[in-house]
Length: 343
Image (cartoon, rainbow, N blue to C red; front, top):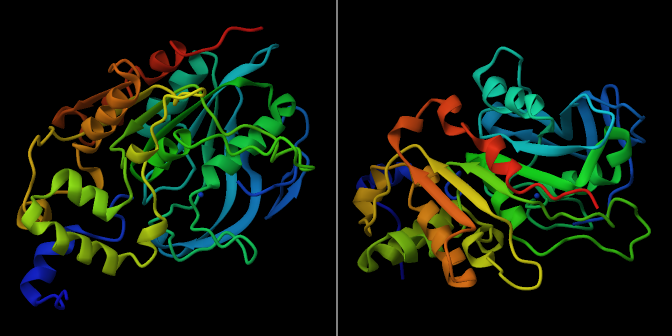
């Protein structure tokens, strides 16, 4: 049986914080009224902040307990015809708000609008960061599904938003790379539902992710990246810190090349690939949340599933650290390569 941690081990494992390796129920076709995330129909021409895609609220621990809602900000590309859409999922410590002068706006929204893409910035729960939250009393699953809910809601309101729901893309960073997990799941739509939102697809054309966590499983992380002798201890520490660990899931374990193959993925990391197994002491000196070997591990799963490396690429380099302009450079061009033509 595993023994309790001593002080030395507690010090070693500070790096294994709760964010390590780190939400489709039916919705109604609604958006937020001012001041409350109560669903109401989106009007034609809708844009701007705080459009509501669901009714859940939660205290966000990475923002000092600030109360958040299932909302999105929508930046409309001017067009007389439906536009492709990019959906952004932010990292911990940020909200969906992207001020015009911020580096993140300049790296993400500005190039999207210039290229004729509309842009949606989501507020969402995360399966690890928000593991204490349940979706509802009747749907108690750990909240993996918020990005999927938002995709369904936006597609159901495609006409009001003037977006082409055949051309939807996901971009995320750190916590926001829940987008990768979402994109690699089977379509969550329910074609027989009476709810017009639940009938919408959760699939996307492609994903671009910075510092992506490609598994939320401590056991899988250990198997992939930790020396065999230290794996049991690593898993014990992770599971003790994360009581809902059995529900977290894995993008690596979800790769599918079947009748509806998973979309292309581009991964960027801000430190070089390690390329070898690490001890418990070594991993404690690193950032396991943004571990660069997450990228090659996912791409190896793509290689095994598809038989080639074309659908998953990664770049791991310190030049990306602290520079969103560099980390997201070319992300819109990547999406352009995966646009579907009009029927």
